[in-house]
Image (cartoon, rainbow, N blue to C red):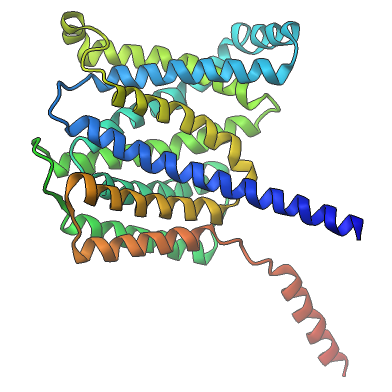
Length: 342
């Protein structure tokens, strides 16, 4: 009886922790989209998005260094790890500069997209990262998708097409927008997300190097890449107005969500399954839609509603575990042999 009670308590704690992970993942995804949209459409002086992306990389680096220090548990081992894997590994830094560059482009495209599209429309359309990641997984990691996953991929694309067919309009947003430019930015962002995510996974699995060491390598390259982007894109204006021009508490909140959200997801992903991650994405879409209606006066159309429903269902279907058919096939083979024997 004691063992059963103990196992029940462990299962209960695991369930509560998974629900906690689900809630945080959902809230961070929805809050980031809504907050970023608000900062890009308010009537205040607009900040430079390239600087926000750069600061996000700096904060991620500092957090990763802190977590690695805690993971090593000893100052000597921590210094040795940094000396060996960062200062003494220029090839690895170059290798991680590839996803750094791609992620930098992706993050800047997110700012451009949310400057021109409603948060709910963005949240739904951004789920195109799923088929893009699936395609990169097949091509780069030689994995296969089940029939159900392929069906869900086409369902998701169909849902996004419906959402973009007659995009829902926000009546409370007065700034000039270009929906076509916004959709183009999302298209670039999802391509970057798919490629960079699979590339980083391939690098992680090519050695037993710590995730946080890899993150430090990537964020170091990311800071250099984003600083170059700041100079090339807004260098002249930043020299005139200042690096932190237009920054408000809301902008810092967006940077905080972007920094912590990415790191948090990489930590909790091993404690959740694909179904839970899919449910989190669907819940974030619903929350973003509700918030957009309340804050930005989003007018929901029939095509938007149907497309959103289709996307949510396809996310759920894509995350369903594959059926193990080996035992079924073995059973069928045994039954056939018995029939032949008779």
